[in-house]
Length: 230
Picture 1: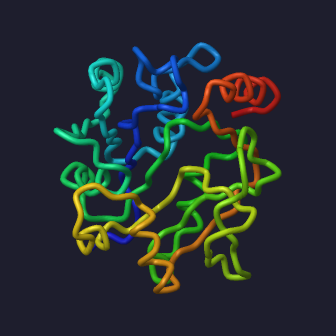
Picture 2 (picture 1 turned 30 degrees about the vertical axis):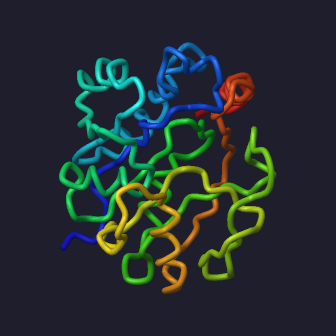
């Protein structure tokens, strides 16, 4: 079995409720930031690593995303009749992604600095890791509301709580998804398995990052794009 990732999963199915009126007629990944659909920033990063496949999951207002992504060669994983959350959505997309570990990306963030996918690929050690999460120190996580998500020990193994914010990019082995007896579930359930086996790791991102999950985040992201090279 291949032990290194060769495909990228873009999470694009959500309702975008934090965006309020902006997502009434538009899926969140298609909201414009500095004149471009938000998902295009994730696509730029994904293309830089030349993956075998880029896959996006669709549920909320899928027609707009399909029209935008299909001509770009992105494979589409349609969730129906129900949205499946991140864990269920990733498992549903496995026929398109294959059996190897995969990159996953949230599509509502902006990265400023080196490509997080490249950094994760270079740091990936499948002998020790079942997942490697690219995390941002809270001080460099613009638009973040509240505390961080994780703490890392001296070896990079992570536990819940602390000042590291999960940035929405990871490399993850998918075999554990088959052990979860649910249809709709979060990736947190898979991470919990990996944490308990001491195989959940973090890579600290050296640049800046912005959450664009709510309306005010658009201006913050555009300011970041102006002040840093993405």
